[in-house]
Image (tube, rainbow, N blue to C red; front, side, top):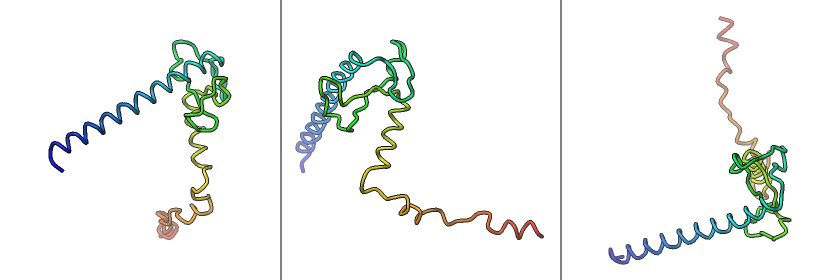
Length: 124
C-alpha cells in the first residue's frame, strides 16, 4: 500500500468513526429526551429522585438491551440511576447464554494456598 493509499484509508476510517459517533449521539439524544418527558425523574430500581442539578446521573435503560428498539411510547425504556443501570448490565452479562456457568468457573478457582503450612510453622 502506498503512502497516498494509506492516507485515504485512514481518512475514510476517521469519516466512518465520526459518522457512527454522530449517529449514536443523535439517537441517544432523541430517546433520552423522549424518556425524560414521558417518565417521572425517579430511578426505576432504587426510587432515587432527580432534579435538574443531578439529571445527568439518570440514564435510559433499554429493557430488551437493543439500543435501536426505541418505540415512541417508551415501552422498551426505563429510567435508572447510573448505579442501578450498571448493576442491570452486569447481571445481564452474567446471565447471557454461552458464558461459562458457575460450575465451569469452579474448575478455574485459585489452587494456591498461601497459608497451607502455617499450622505447622506455628507449632514450632
